[in-house]
Image (cartoon, rainbow over all chains, first blue to last red; front, side, top):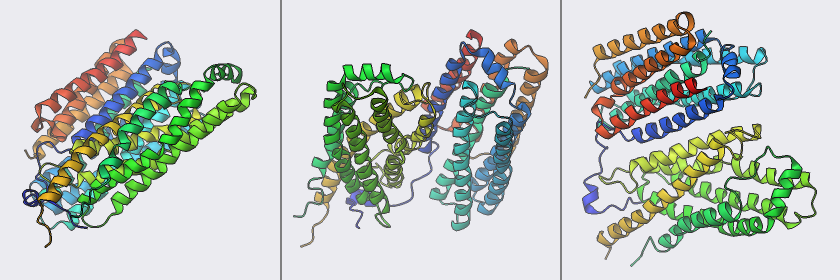
Length: 201
Length: 240
Length: 86
């Protein structure tokens, strides 16, 4: 299957140069936009049901939520270090940091599963009330993002292995993948207080 | 001279035409802005449905007939993707299949809704409601057929190494994002009211809006890409 | 445009301190009503740190920076706003 390029385009047949603004930002913007909508829907549904929502929120374990926030922040830091190493051209160093990021980040999944199980065992399911419907839906959607993020990190680790040098295409992947992982972190930074802390004590 | 892009533009027109049919016939004439709430009891639903049965029937028939255009649209997009694919034609094939199967999701639920209008005046309200619900479950929860099309398309266009890509990268990312956003529809069968229900803020207003934007934006760039590819083909030295 | 390890450490530390600090305030110190505004401001500050430094938004286009600053304001403002109106 011939690519069918015109002569002027053939000169372009090289890896896309890494710009300061990788195109994944379009996805990040769209996804952050959708989360803003989720926040708006949650908070507007809360109007008029504030005591129900607050009382339900108090049944969540804020310490687990806090732990998860700290886990993702640490994981983000480790991944950032991996990206920094890749930018300096040291792919094996990058790979080490990315692995640390994956291992620490994996803790989030473990805590989440523990949390969901404990809630369900106490009879708190998505059908319990409106708050819990949102709690499960929002953290569930975030969890899907998180799982995709883990997969992305594994892909990045594989790229550090298969690439011999930190060429622009590899760097684009690593920069973009890191940016996605940081998004998973920052979305949780808003989700945590909104879901766990508004109810107070 | 061989023209590898013959008929492609014609197929590409399917996109805008189906978008028009979907908005005018399915949405407006078909009384789907928004659909009837799942929260209504059967009697109330039946009364409202019967009142608009003729209009809905017309809207749904038009959508059933127009549904095939999603498939033909996908064929046009495939030809663009084939110009970019280097290793094999997996992505364009996935896109074509995704588009083809999505065409059925226009046809079948609309067939069910048309059936509901057929004897609406005399049918028992629970049966009417069940048919309506049936159409909506299939319509909404079959999203992954379309996700495959959108993700394949997006991944392919992200791999375009032209200095000025045929499809801008943000469109490729938008396509992937829309395909993944559809996963919210997994929640639809759990709710009869609220943002996750079939007429809710998220599972109707947001999801359907982004789908229509996807059709419009991708249609636009399909046309511009066809023009560029035709020009490139003509500019290329021909075998003697 | 590269990330620096020192910068990463500083940002990470700021995020950890901000997280622990606002949690202590939320759970143990402040009245819920005053506390929420403080928590959301701190959350906004944390999100901005992640965007600007970890995600290197400070090296990206001006439009993106403005867009995300607006997004942060809208999200934090909306959550706080709806909270106080409820």
